[in-house]
Image (cartoon, rainbow, N blue to C red; front, side, top):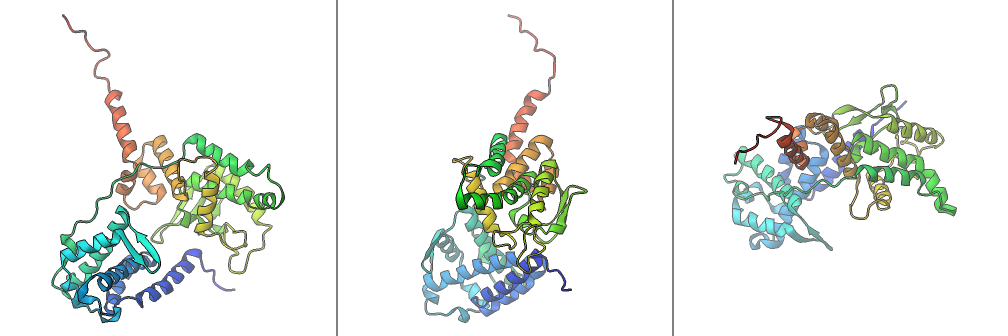
Length: 357
């Protein structure tokens, strides 16, 4: 019998092949950097770095007169020493809006920060190994990220969302009714799981049937970075999963997808895009003012857990944040509300003394 290849192992193989293709579009000397960062990064991270660094060289070819007649293969490591801080400030400006083929690309604060951080890591590698003599990236300010308020569902909206998934198609007829009945139990189990555990959508689609443990009411998830963790769920999640698994037993999957917990309509492992689309479809019937994504369902779980427990370390652990500061940053506004409560929580005297006239 062939050894079972997990979703995450297969994704890693696919990403490795994709990375090799992207590296072919970069100057040859760049391969040293990607080999060096391999032990401490995921293939997904390295692909992001490769795309970011490719944009930098495209910028030099298009916008810098010194390199206008060059080809990408002509760049050698010493070219990095010719780039000044002013060049990088121009690059930062270029990143806000640029053409990539027929497509116009834009970057906000987060996109700019990520691309400049990628370039900073790239330069730091060659500078540390004394292959270049200057590192202008340290002279350029990285954009400051302005924190946005957490978009999440309120308790009544969560109930409405689940009710709509369960009964929203009751009045449908014909093919729409057939499709609704076919996917209802799966969608309810999926959304209930996201809301009841706070797992990432990538972790959810990567679940295998063997990862579900009803004896302990939990699932084994593979976190970002490849670490495995057991995440517990409540009775509502258990009930929705059991009902879906009964339906799942009657589906004959496409070869190679037998272990997947959640199947698509094509009887294959469901993918991230499909989950994003179904969450958007159902949520739009519950709220028109909030753009709800699977990640917002994760935020809803994190917020509720923090409100109920007040334990930021527990929230960080359950959500799989390696650094608790990441969690603190997301829930800073809620911390402020709790600090305000603290102002009136401690009474120094039973009653304020009356002032004499």
